[in-house]
Each structure stands twice: as C-alpha cells, then as structure tokens.
Image (cartoon, rainbow, N blue to C red; front, top):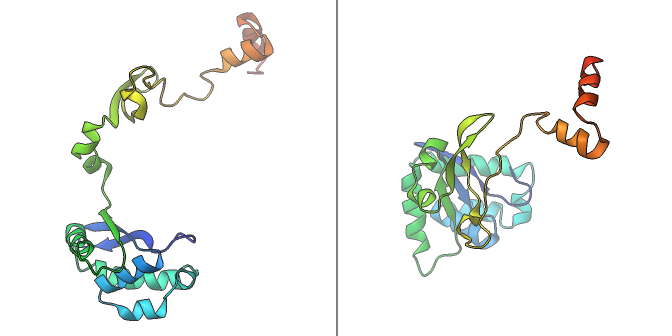
Amino acid sequence: YDYAVFPYSYFKCKDGYAFLSGFTDPNWAAVCEIMNRPDLQQQFPTIKERLTPENQPKIQHEIEKWTQNYTSEELLEIITEYSRRPDKKGTVVTGRLEEPKDTLQREHWKLRHTFVEFDDPYYGKILVQDSSFHQMSRTPGRIKWPCRPIGADNALIYKKFLGYGPSKLEELKSKGVL
C-alpha cells in the first residue's frame, strides 16, 4: 500500500494483475462509478479515509473482487469507455502488469531505443536500459558500464587517493592486508 496515494496499486484480474489508479476524490468517484459501487464512495468519500492502514486493505479487497471478473484488456476497455463519457466524474488510469519478456516486445520501446544490447567485459552481452540522451546530436548519451564488480576500481583509488603504486599494492596483498 502507498500511504500517500490510494488506490494506486496492482489488483488481481483474470489474466494476472492490472494497475489501477484513482486516488484523488474525483478519480475515486469515477472508480466507484465504473465498479457500480456508490457505497464505497459513501464509506470512503475523501482521501483521508482511504489512506488509513485499516481502510486500505478493505478497499483493496473490494476493488479486487471487481477486477477479478475481467481480464486486463477488458478492464482497459471498460475504463477507456468511461473516460470518453462527457459526464465522467474523474480520470482512472489502468494497465496490465507485464512480464519483462512481454514488455520488451512492445513496439514503443523499440522505436525509442529504450533497451539496447551491451557487451560488457565482465558480464558479456546483456540487455540494459539505454540513455534517453542518445538522440542528442552534440552531446549524445552513452553507456560506460552497467555495473562494476566489487573491487574493480581499487587499484585506481589506491593510486589516485593514497599514492600506492603496483609494488605497494603487491606488498599489501602479500601481507594479507588487501
């Protein structure tokens, strides 16, 4: 649960989990209207009532009783249809919780070059999130390394900050200090 905004969470549905957000009072009113649950809006009318540790599990349970009747795609359709209504009470956000392998198949990630294959000297070929600055012509972003192993830069640190050269490092290693 998020004790600053709720509902702003994942809920079970027929095909896994779906995200649903409707934490402001108008958006909560929309969630309740979509679910045909005016009683929930009356019981928890303001964000103050919805944010308590006692009430969040109750609300989660009630929303999940509804979302479990639908697939994530059906939820998206229901909420999208509601969003098109001129008399809507608020805005509800929803989306399917995807596995990483499913996410990587989305065309918009490919068009934006969000993920790239990177050949790392320590880990080999890995998939990493690319810099959003790669499209800048004068100062393009780059990936220097994804993650360095522990101790990978020790020799540089010992030299730069302590003035230890290779012979001093060997001496310390032979004594078991390093």
